[in-house]
Amino acid sequence: MTPRTLYRKLVGSHTVATLDEQNVLLFCDLHLMNEYTSPQAFAGLYEQGRGVPMPGQNVAVVSHIIPTHPVKFRVIADTASALQATNLRKNCDHFGIPLFDTNDALQGIEHVVAPEHGMIRPGMVVICGDSHTTTYGALGALGFGIGTTEVEHVLATQTLVYRVAKDMRIRVDGTLPLGATAKDLVLALIGRIGAQGARGYVVEFCGSAIDALSIEARFTLCNMAVEAGARGALIAPDQKAIDYVMAHAPDIATGHREAALAAWENLRSDEGASFDVEHRFDATHVAPQVTWGTSPDQVVAIDGRIPQPDELPDGPERRSADRALRYTRLLPGAAMEGTPVQHVFIGSCTNGRIEDLRAAAVVVRGRHVAEGVRAMVVPGSGAVKAAAEAEGLDLVFTTAGFEWRKPGCSMCLAMNDDVLADGVRCASTTNRNFEGRQGRGAITHLMSPAMAAAAAVTGRITDVRRMENLQ
Image (cartoon, rainbow, N blue to C red; front, top):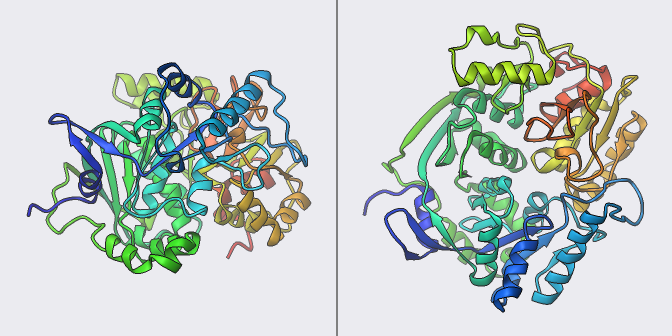
């Protein structure tokens, strides 16, 4: 038998029919929905008189539009947003689809909620009307984002017309040094291969540096693979992944453990499997990273300098750098370290998990938010919030002058009332620094939770490795 990659195995095991040389009809084990990509899909079902044949394999979460103010009962004040949430509830009730609603104690960001409740298992195909569905590759599941018309097709058939991607393998060996995290690693990788470097590919990460990452760190890595254009990201499930799933999916651990382990045994690329493109990287010299522009690949190490556009080849890259620097109001050749910030945001589906909050709390403990800085921590889910409060992390943050908020997407994107004003510079743990992403004219610098925490207490972009008592 011809050796196959993990990606090809997952596609093969879920192919209902081969449509042509490039497209298959793919069965989807789990379909996640949110309030902003589902309304038209449900409307299409009503118009065609169709039902949802497998409602239990669809799950909905209110996450993007929800306010995160620390109130007991949340009310969505914006009329259009409130209508989206109300319609999602009505549609889920009508079709029997489980919903994490606005005031559900376990509500949160879909990509945080799903794995923590054991919905994601190795070998699954998981889809969602959100590009960061690549997150689930951390557990050996093929996750990817889809469009609204595809959401309707999946609701009606639990299948998807899918164009098969090409294979890319990224091997990362070595050891991440103190102060560097999975967020820094993935930003450095994106900076190397570019925002389109993995376009058309599903990326498989491997190597000793990947093996050493925790599962939550792997979520961060796979989450941001889409920022290099990847159509998916995968890490072959190892014992860490199995232990995570067993801890979060008691139905498997108590009743189907042996069958699951047997099914997962072959979830790895075969020896000799062919990849269309391969990259190798060394994690040893990865430093904390900070974006300087308006794309995640416009990034430098904290001790680096902003590029000089006139030193770049004449063409799109130079024009993009020129435009980005005009938007971010930074000077070519200037140092990133020391750049003042007015806002700090810690949260999102990239860095809103308990490990992320712990890392930020280590920096914050015993310090205070700098004068003139507004700092927010938004847990990725109700479960993360409860775990953090049980550990006293909320008190660490609030004592230091941070706002401790309710779960949600919040300031990752300007779709709710957590929006930055024109010209406000934000140290952010999110995944995108596009123009206007956090508000019209707002300036976003992507970085790790520890780096964002350091910016909060110093009032400027700061090398976290310079902070004391971080061991």
